[in-house]
Image 1 (spheres, rainbow, N blue to C red):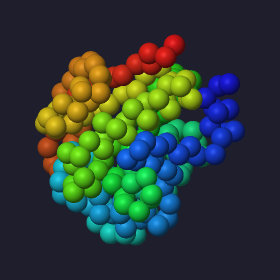
Image 2 (tube, helix red, strand yellow):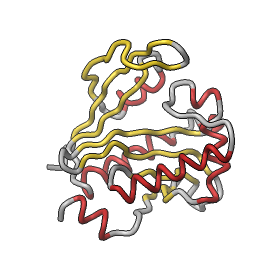
Image 3 (cartoon, rainbow, N blue to C red):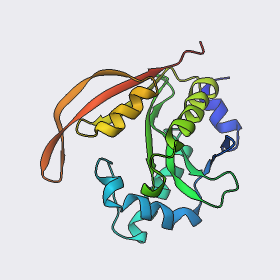
Image 4 (cartoon, rainbow, N blue to C red):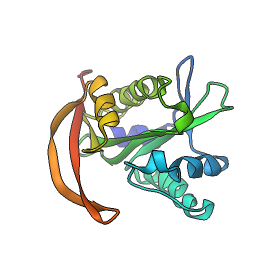
Length: 186
């Protein structure tokens, strides 16, 4: 079955480990998404940020639009009982035709260094490679973000190169490192 048929035929998949539940974002997550995507430490190297709950609604709408348009799929990362919200992770810029997507991930700072990202990311990779039949997952990381670059290397991403001074952020040019992980299931 092709990835587009899979996305249309199945309900939003919940992904689980003993410590984590990855589930669809809900309207009740708005405040937690705002807490994350307005926090200076989280948004320092992140592509979006919000200054109000009203603005943050655009992020929830973006999650849902990605699903509807089959251009991505994002999960809220929570405790297994769904009582504690840790952050979000998922796929965007997905092209089913070219069998690739871009990975994204963020956590509330109080959950940094607790092994959540290395536990959650393989769930997303497995879903992308086995269920969606993607071939390539890209990670675009600001060159100054050494912690994230170290994390994606631990997840066996390959550094493919650097786009120098390719974007403007806060009035200055930034460079982006390109990482990729490939489907080893087929």
